[in-house]
Image 1: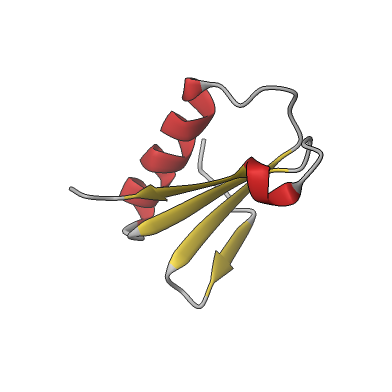
Image 2: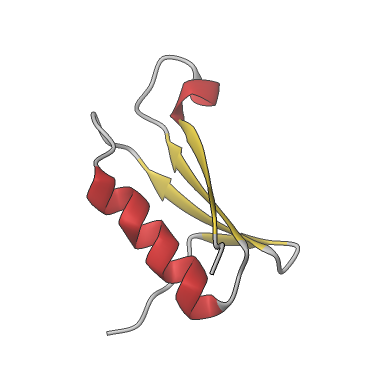
Length: 64
């Protein structure tokens, strides 16, 4: 089974979109795995199930 990114911005930032009541550690781990597999340095996990969108944005970095 392969990974299909929701968005890749400027060939550098992988974006994963969610609409969840609670973002769990497994969701962050999914994004980290995907940016490592694809070679991207930055990943954004954006959850739309929040009153203010800015509260639903998490930036994750591939530091390996």
